[in-house]
Amino acid sequence: MFLYVRMFLIMGITLYTSRIVLRELGVSDYGIYNLVGGFVAMLGFFNAAMSSATQRYLSFDIGKGDHVQLKKTFSTTLSIHIIIAAIGLLLAETIGLWYVNNKLNFPEDRMYAVNVVYQFSVFTFLLSIIQVPYNALIIARERMKIYAYVSILEAILKLLIVFFLVYFGSDKLITYAILTFCVTLLINVIYQVYCRREFQESKYHFHYDKQYFGELISYSGWNLFGNIAAIAKGQGVNIVLNLFFGTVVNAAYGITNQVLSAVNMFVSNFQLALNPQIIKSYSQGNIEQSQYLISQGSKFSFYLMLIIVSPIVLNVDFILETWLVNPPEHMTIFVQLCLLNILIDCLSGTLMTGAQATGKIKWYQIVVGTLVFLNLPISYLVLKLGYKPYSVYGVSIFISLITLQFRLYFLNNVMSFNIIKYFKEVILRVIILSIITLGLFVLLNNTQLMNQEIGDFILKSLIMIIFIVGSVLIIGLNKQERKLIFNFINKIRQ
Image (cartoon, rainbow, N blue to C red; front, side, top):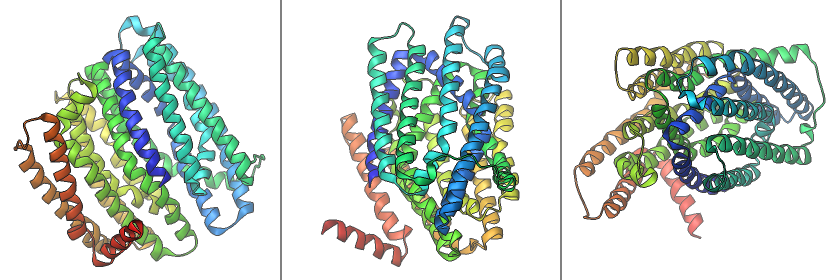
């Protein structure tokens, strides 16, 4: 419940602040900020791999009830993250700094601003690395209330940054980068203080167990394939777009990612609460329960996303013009294709958690990671051949469909996951619902229901949502699931 209160508040603030920041910075500077910040994020490829390992091992130890091992795991992962931060700093101030000043495409008169933004993006990046074990511990302990409260505070502080940006700052791009760093620093301090007061295992003690260090690094090493691939798909493609089209397209790409983040909160909060349960069930030997949670999580993630995405795709022009007033070029098709892509990807969320839970991820990461990484070279190739900027999303959608199949195949190998049952209970229902939704989309898209634009937007959105919810209840759920839903509704009414 707390996560969803957080979600609606943060989503509203995120969308509002994006509009104001775009207006205050201008399209080019907004593109610069997203490009530079994204480039710095690319340097954290190993940190992303360790994040998955940290979450998995902490949840696994809690599921087994091994508090001694839990303390050891936390201290060991924190030590590794400190080492990662040091390596990240070295890379950022050598290779990274050279690349920013010599290879990125931005106006020459913004050289000083770009370098200041880069340095504060690096500082923010280093803080995020050290923070990973603390956030992972909060999630593993399922303390979603504090996670929601602090996230809401962070969103409010970012809103205050926007108001400050309107009235102060001679160079608004530099001011924005500095204030964003200050907010990140404050939030990290709050999380760390909370963990040290509430969780005994969060009190750091240096442990050097060569074998355990090796186990964590080995697990993270295989995760490295997947995380490098994810960064190549996201920020790598952003840099490729910069090479061909400059910072204006980077602005459109950055705003599209803001939409993605806002919409994805609906599913990420659901999976955030579910993922520790999948890992804990597996650690306790309850494989059947773990598989059940994986399938249910995959199916309900798609339904939640479909309910949110469909009205946005249907009314995307009206939403963008109302939100941004003058949206950057290509925004409409960027947003539509991006939302279609996350509809496909949300099916894979709990499948990935299931694979992580088993710890048998070597070939999974090699094969799936390689497929996801192909987004970068294929996107470069299609842009080199003269295709439009939005073609990169077409590449991403195609690869997402392929990787979904491979994830199911590997899950079957490592935990005897029933693919046929998953196809009947999840994929088949998802396909039928998608076809029905597409038909309604075509009908409403070619029909004007009211004379007023805002009235047309509201009415079409309501029709779409009601129709999809009804279709989910009738077609998307089996008898047992419908019974559970109706029982839950009755409890709320009482």
